[in-house]
Amino acid sequence: LYLRIAPELYLKRLLVGGLERVFELNRNFRNEGLSPRHNPEFTMIEWYQAYADHHVMMDLSEALFRSLADRVLGTRTLRFNGHVLDLGAPWRRIAYHDALQEFGGLDYTDQVAVTAKARDLGLQLDDFPTYDRLANAVWEAVVEPHLIQPTFITDQPTWLTPLCRTWPNDPQKTMRFELFMARMEVGNAYSELNDPDVQRQRFVAQGAEATAAKDDEAGTLADQIDEDYCTALDHGLPVCGGQGIGIDRLVMLFCGQASIRDVILFPTMRPG
Image (cartoon, rainbow, N blue to C red; front, side, top):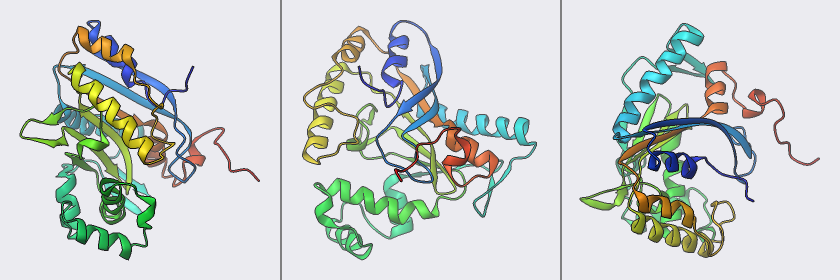
């Protein structure tokens, strides 16, 4: 038995079985350390909709957050950690690579410039076994501080997202978005990958990349893939979109609490 990092592979089995819309409020466990935004055990809502894509998920996200704000707070203006967030205005949508160019003045493919920026940021190059991991760390450092108002970051690199469809005209980019507010990721969504052969290849590649990177937090098991899930895809997963939203971070935003420990009854604490 293993603690799950997400309900995704189980909920999509239900779509294979014929249910067209499914959701679950769930507990997940990720060994990602402790911070004001991270707790190893956390709550999510995750849902999947057949015959939808990540664009539908974006529209649904905006409608959901506005409805929650109207019903819970009576206003679409949130005050969080010194910022005033406007949920009523149209939410920006910008591609991952475009955001790096806009906020960092960097081309993702320019390894010399990105590596130089990593040095300027004080990143230890030896800590990153691949250029992609280094570039993503640079992206987080130079882009996330600017993501105050609700923003959808789209088209992430494929290596980051083994369960997501890629763009037919650019297989190095995925049909995905992450939702940011107040410099914090609060949602993640895909147009789901439903090709079983490609999914098996992605699982193998993900495991090999995590092993080479000595990444103990990637949620992979050495030399193992979820063959039961791949067998479910063999039976046919419809084209679908799926999304997860962190409930604890959502409560942080709506309550104006800057630390996740203040919205969890029994948060994990550091020893001593």
